[in-house]
Length: 450
Ligand code: ADP
Image 1 (cartoon, protein in one colour):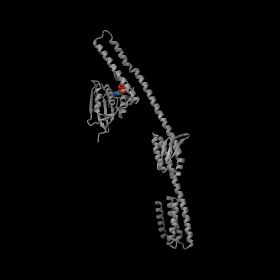
Image 2 (cartoon, rainbow, N blue to C red):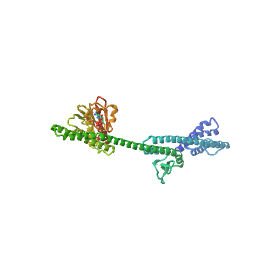
Image 3 (cartoon, rainbow, N blue to C red):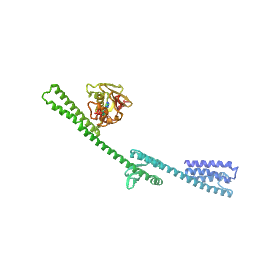
């Protein structure tokens, strides 16, 4: 419609242009002015509108300019020749500029296709999920090929009267299906099949291979890790479980010695109880760790008061441990598994007490954005930078533990980290040698109503 309006407007303009020019040269040679309109129309709207513009131009030229003016008849037979010459020139012009238009459109489409191929490669090979990349590629394909929609499915997908299924295969292997609307123009579809489908199929094949390799690597890594954990557990079982048992057997045998005083008997009894408690702790730790490793320690998230969970962790600390606790009054409740967070905090408090040389351990809690941040701070020896990541690994014991009179098993922090992260929180340490350590636990706060 716009093309027709432009054609009529251009013919009118050219007709107007001929008037002043008539005084300068013979009117029969001025048909050439109309070619301007014909060139423009056929370059933008194609051959047939160009031909129509040629007809309209010939009619206007004849009516307005060739004598007798104001009629469609022609007085002088030489003017017939001028009109015919104009018409032939207009048709030729129309053909040439239409070809140029088609070629430019084709070049544009090829460029868009080349861009699309690069984009397909980027989407498929740089992204993690093939499924997500295919959805985006479908949308881009539809845009470049002027289709109402296009989707790509993995594996086979059936065609129906409204959908056309183009297979994407690499050799014998069927990878997926490109599905497009059945009514799409045949020319576009054959371009799609010839120019885009082979590249798309090849890259899809590569992306699927890569995805398979990555998932195999993840599985192997998982197996390797669980093997490493099993070995570490065996090591702990053989050493850490053995030493309290040995102590208990020794104390149990000594109790039977006849000439023991009452206080010696008490001392041995206390030793058996202490070592038994240590053993029980270790067994609990091992069970927690194996649950975390097997992903069966699923948290039961509830709304927990930060104050209550800190109090519960404090309650499990020895009587003689000193704490300086300050909790910001505006702190919100957190989304967490109460028992797991309590356990994590208790482990941090226990470590801090152990390393703080009798100085009180500082506990601070305050809101930061949409999270609650709890800090357990001690003035102990600090932790070497190289140890700071590794201390959260199961069974890893840092340099600082050399000064520890009651060596642990290296499980406390691994369990704390497992529990905090299982509930959507984060845990880390801020420390430097000689200036104490701060263990930070960050938990998602429950949004305030309204
Ligand atoms: P364990 O205390 O049984 O060794 P943990 O997993 O609780 O095991 O801690 C791992 C290591 O982290 C410890 O061996 C110790 O080197 C270091 N560590 C933990 N807490 C502190 C602390 N508050 N100050 C200094 N070092 C610490």
